[in-house]
Length: 229
Image (tube, rainbow, N blue to C red; front, side, top):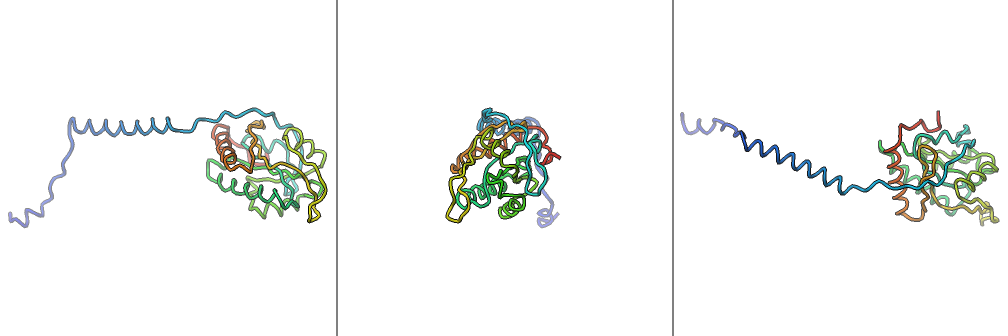
């Protein structure tokens, strides 16, 4: 065979046999175990969430004009906050932060997290007003609902188990009522237990809220369709 022809003959691939193959397999397994151990050792511990009371039964109306009860919140974690559509101070900021949370939890694992915004001006914020407000902040109706209803019922719910205020203190320069309420978000678990209160002015607290909501979504059962139907 000529030297040129010899150069064209492929060199047989080297194979690993015996102890070398065994050592290579053990090496790969060892690396995999080390990665798993490191991931487990460095993972963030599960949060210890308080029990701040249970949401009672209620009957309100959503932005589509449909009945909305506490059963709509059962079976999945829910973030709750408070606004009114004529507010031009804290409420737009709350709505923008809520919209951002909706975007942050739009992945498959976060989709079980629902959001409920309660109007503290229910006499004005009828369903059509809430629907306009929801559209302004790109609310996904399968995940983010807005509710209104009888003022006495709203007041009892907001100032009672939801631990907020909705006092009217005169009017704003625009002529809209000055309704005092906090910018706090609440977190409910799948059994309607309040598991945390978070100041929306504190970005670290909002990060905690998302982390805690994801924890509840991960450890809870299969969620109902939002709306309880």
